[in-house]
Picture (spheres, rainbow over the protein chains, first blue to last red):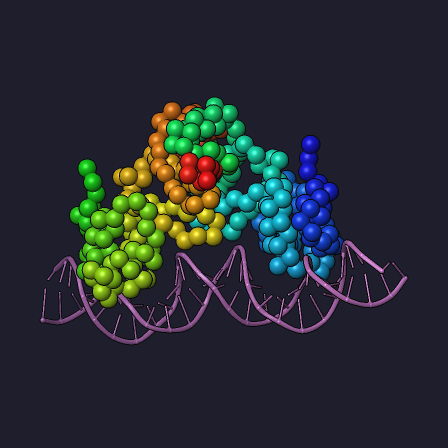
Length: 144
Length: 144
DNA sequence: CCGATGATTGAAATTGATTATCATGTTCTC
DNA sequence: GAGAACATGATAATCAATTTCAATCATCGG
């Protein structure tokens, strides 16, 4: 099932933190967003529906969402800003990134995950998370 | 065979760029280093053998080494500085990162690479490079 | 409901890695 | 070895992200 503001509120209550208008505003817009969004973009989007929420608070709320396991942060280029996506959709998918046009395609490959687990165990590691990104040219850029 | 300063010099000559004391100093120390090293660390190391080389020049030379295909930059944590390693050892290996102690183990998994290629082709991508990092707990941290 | 306590907010300042600037110094070609 | 182009390095600038801090707000106990 999809995660909602209720999940964040539960996390906040458990930690003795407070449920505020601003946090609910940020979480609401975040959960209504599909795909990747940067803190800056989320700030703009939140400002439209709930003006008066500061960029600082957007950053802080995204951090909380990460801690609560509801959001995942990614960084596709060395010099770019981080982007966030919902953890339930983030789980177990990887990315293909076009180095020319920047297009990002998500894909799944369960067999690779299995092999990752095995490789990790051979080195005494337990896997909590993984990051796999393939960089290359997409169809349009290759034929252009 | 291992790459050396000569390879950087060849690249520089081809591009009409100049071979300088500073670039040779940075490259020398870089090629003598195994594993990962940050620009800052390399700067300190270079300063010991060849004082008077600026941090700016270390960054610039590392950029050249990357362009020449002799170095590879990685960034293991969102907020950390980039680290560099020799391209010939970097090629086709991936990383296991302990989220507790920060230990980094390198491993190879040719079968995963093959599957990556296949997955990419299914989405119309050609693969130029890839990044795969597994995050978890190493043996010592798990049993501690 | 009220007041105390401690968390939260947001504007501004700060950070930290990396890059740009620019005057000066160096390399390489002819 | 002269000249043009490139390189250097101290400093300033950048930029996402975090910290600061005084003012505000949420929550709990009574």
